[in-house]
Image (cartoon, rainbow, N blue to C red):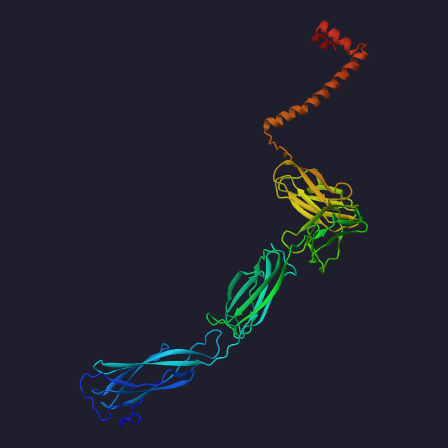
Length: 529
């Protein structure tokens, strides 16, 4: 915007001067300045284009004026000028209006009230208001690409129907959506919503849900506008519509049970697997698409079958490959996608197996030095050897019996049909411990019991140390006396033997001599002999 003014030399009134008092001087003190004439109104303007706004002014008693230019669009400017007293003077200002284009409008006019005020040093003033009609020269595209659809071919009156609606605007302006629902008798619901501005030309989705409630023909009309009230009219307000047939929808019909082929299954361990086919039959009188969801009760993800629609009877089949036996709860859910139209079946299936359990080959503790017991805080080595006909993974749990954490291990490597595991443990206290070893191939179903155990007794013992005795003189004397006993006995045996021989030469036995000695006295006999 450029603002300027120009003082025009005084001229006789009647030419360009609009004054009717030619040659009349106004030299009276205190007389207010006058705006003699202004631009025509409504003054035409175009947005972004600079316009020239001219006025004739006069003041009888002042040589200076203060000018205030209030353009009416929020811009206010001031300027000063000097004029010749009592002379009509032409002033002008240049200004361009730049209004923000209104949403959803093209080539429209907007009105401004432009006010020029003149004031002399004695605060006397005059003003003039000019109506400006500004053309907003813009081209705004209307909404386009309107799309409206529902997620079903037939609608149940109690069903929440998902209605998909979309459109786009070339300028990406915010959109106003009006959905009108009609049952061929009256409009029974009007839903108004708004979506924010987007990138230019970007498709905008405004999906809603609706319950039609009554059986019969219904009509859904969607109006989309990029304009604001009160300008929501063609071409900036477009519409589209769909017809909806509402009727009672029947539940899909499903066979009474889940069929199996074969009727019973045994997984042969030498083969490693067995195949089972599960099947059901289903159809829908309304021709809806059927969704069949299978859950096989073995922890695997659910599997889904989907029909092509129509009233034909469909045969749905699923095949499972079992490598182990077990009891499985097979469930299947059939629906046409409507609330309350789900039909469920289930069947308990037993799959047997010829798998055999693992067995024990060897379980033994090995003490230090190959002894029969271990010592506290000394490592005890263990050897465990297991076998499994199918060489399945063997899970082993070891409880050392002393309150320490259990040991868990999976044996997977077999050598000559055996899986060997060596392990160690240290016991802190003297005690007899029971080590409990559980082992299984985790086959819950097969021949015999697949969960087995074995226990080992571990002895932790400290032998009594030898006693060391230090001898004194009495101990040695006692030992000497003890040693003399056999010597004395030998000497006595020699003496008795010699005496016996002497008595025999005398014709007397030792026993006879003892009797005589008792009679005669032992001393005399000893003297004689």
